[in-house]
Every structure is written in C-alpha cells, then in structure tokens.
Image 1 (cartoon, one colour):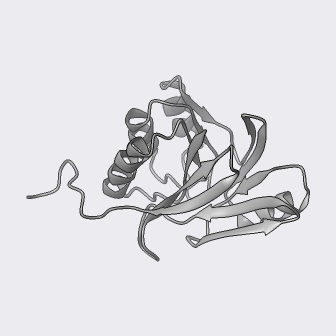
Image 2 (cartoon, helix red, strand yellow):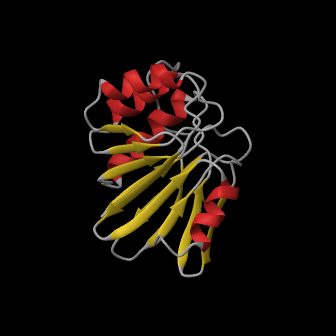
Length: 174
C-alpha cells in the first residue's frame, strides 16, 4: 500500500494542488497529514483533492480547531485526530505527531513500525530501534524545496518527493 505523507502546508494552496496531482499519479491509497494547515480552507482543499482516507493531526499553527473539525465532518474520508494519531495499515503500526521531539520518543518506544512528524520544515528519515522516523518536509516551500513523502507499507520504505513547481495550477496566470 502506498501512503502519501504531507506536512506544513501553511495555506500554500498552489503547492498543495501540485502535490495532490503528484499523489494521484503515484496512486497513493491514503494520505497522512502532520499539522499546520493554518486556515481551515486548506483542509477543505485537501479533502476535495484526495478521495481516499485522510488522517490528520493538528500543528502549532492550526488556530481554529473547531472549524477544522467541522470541515473534517463534511468529508467522510477525513479523520482529524487532534495532536496524536495511532493507525494500522496492512499490519504496519504508524504514529503521527506534529513535533519531532515527541516523534523521536515514539520511535524509540518500539511500539510502532513508522513514526511521522513535521514542524521543523526539514526533510529527513532515520531508523531508531528498527522504527522508521521521517519528516516529509514542507508543502509550503518557504524554508526548503517543497516536498511530501511516500511510504510503502509492504517494503516499509519511505521516499521524499519534490513538488513539481512547473505544473500549472488553477488561478495562476499563463
């Protein structure tokens, strides 16, 4: 199973649209979001752009969790978990949290096969006590090249995918 992993959109809906096009081309069957939509309309765009299951946790810049919860409720494929999520896909146990400091501890706990975090806008992956811990980087593209991640449950492998900024998106001039 292929799972797209995204973090730190910070309302860059143009990069989000590009990323969702690439997620579709990669044939991801689920999408995990690690926090910092920022405005609730970004969650709505995410949900309209991906029809498979979406599991999301909150970040430090998600200032209206009530409206985010309402928007999540309007999309049957979206589950907004709060600040932590524990999921299982094809027997692979996964933990989600926005903060790397917490995620590192989760990875060291040996309770999960994979742990994903965002927050620091950095792309990395580590193996800690046989647990994959990865950050997909930022969709926003302010501090580094915009990217997302792709996790394969069968191989338990993770890769970073650069968002193709040459793609045209709705609302941008020709």
